[in-house]
Length: 349
Ligand code: OGA
Ligand code: NI
Image 1: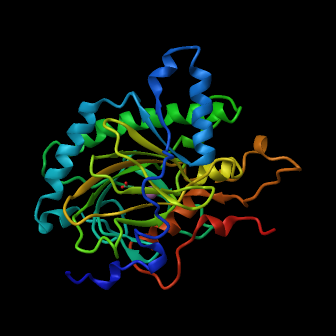
Image 2: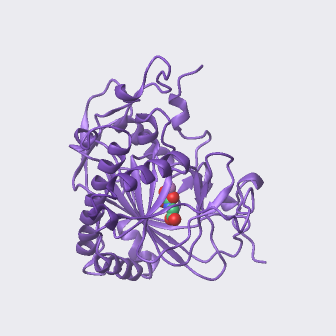
Image 3: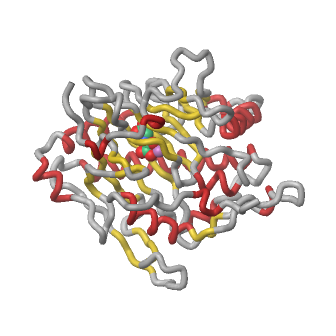
């Protein structure tokens, strides 16, 4: 066996074999959105989405409206980019001023992930707070980085992202309806949305028993829409007991999951599940998540309509932009302490 750089080694309780029971009969739901064309079926689709958000925090969608040629084009062009020599890739490397572009050393909970990534803001430029200081109202603009080669990288990504964003809002409306809220309840939170998307490449790994492609984590966003190839490796922890389940690759499907903002808005009715990526010794894997994020000035706290004297708010509010800038500083280097987590905002009972 080859040696593995110790920075990649997961603690024993977080490795790929922990709490994973193969061949479970249950599966994460796959929902066909073409059923929305049948007026008699719309309500069923909405309640299936609601049930999945409550029970798993994850589901997959088919016939979702993101064209497969847009997806194939982006998959092809990003492979060409990742296959370039390192000296080319680091020309568009992430830095402190504009924390997007290429990066190969992300830490999740202070252990290094076995992956390379490329991050792209949906809005270019994007508005974010200048500092983490809660008193400081200053804002700044951040800009995407684009590689020179392959030449259609930018356009392929922008076209795909526009489709993904459209689907994100459609899902947001369905989720709103599933909560008994007006369809557009959440829309105002996205006037200066901070959404971004990411291309993940997980190279073959000599020790998939010790390292992970992404360590266990919850997404901090509202919802994530993920295109994965046919290799597999994404796993989700079941809400009821924490057992890990694979998210089976389904051709042309997108994987949808609830992030922390939605979990907090719904006062824990909907679940933001822990998930992780298991790697393997032979095949590289690609995935493309689109993370739907609110505007920097949105206060994330339980919605008034969803709290009551019997169901009091479980979280204090926090300003989304300030959370993002604090998190972003700590994500890409190892810190002596754990970075901020959503549980830090839980109301102590
Ligand atoms: C992520 C993530 C899963 C995957 O990037 O946050 O969970 O399958 N990715 O790549
Ligand atoms: Ni994730």
